[in-house]
Image 1 (spheres, helix red, strand yellow):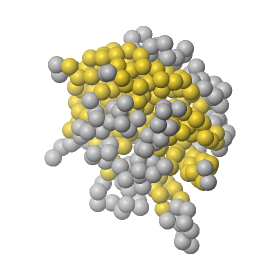
Image 2 (tube, helix red, strand yellow; image 1 turned 120 degrees about the vertical axis):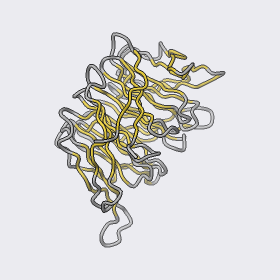
Image 3 (cartoon, helix red, strand yellow; image 1 turned 180 degrees about the vertical axis):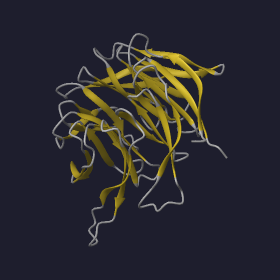
Image 4 (tube, one colour; image 1 turned 45 degrees about the vertical axis):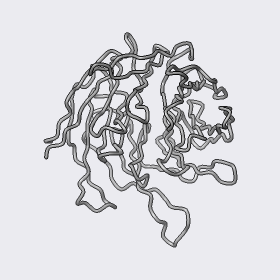
Length: 331
């Protein structure tokens, strides 16, 4: 390990509460965070440090578990344990609650926008994944409810370029969905983890996906051509990162700019892995490049790479803090 993660700044984002998630806007200029205090906070740089620019309150009655920006950067979606998803619209520099999406039976665990901005996915402890369509009048309509998991669904993520959706669950599995004749269907179930799958992240090309789990491993899945020339491609596990994490791995983030892979772990650490560029693409090799042992005082819940500034990473944890890191590769 020659590379280093340097702490740029750490600040209390959700005092006396957990900070569950932090997400960069597409321009990389703002962060949105959420936590157990039911608030969403918008952070921006001011005089070289991060300051709270806005607090979105009264949108939820319980913990806000995830926040997601639309690709245009003008909308923010928040998923809450109160079984709703709120949609916020930026107007004259401030966010206002546009609509509240209801329908899940209990806690909404994650929300994600499709790259087109016309689709939104939500998932819940009620074991379902919902796909919503958005029209030009900002009207949201649920077009499909998929029940492919047998347990709590923890995470949903869209492919970076295609309208393809993936979900991760307490049932240890990952499901891949595509639209077939106006209906979203589960096209593949990826089995391999031996405990809850907490998060997923596609690589920049969308040809590979990383998953992280309560089983303390990270797996890399690759889209492969099926033998026999079938049109439907399949996803295969081509690499397992094991022996690096001492507890559950709660989040994984694949940097779109550098290809580095970051993880958030229940052992209070943030780690960065680097791929061996000389290895066979069908048998990739990742090595631990950097680790901060006590990145947070308690569990690290989330890691997120800045979409525009290479090497800029944020993390948040059960201590309510956000930490901003700079990943520096040794020449």
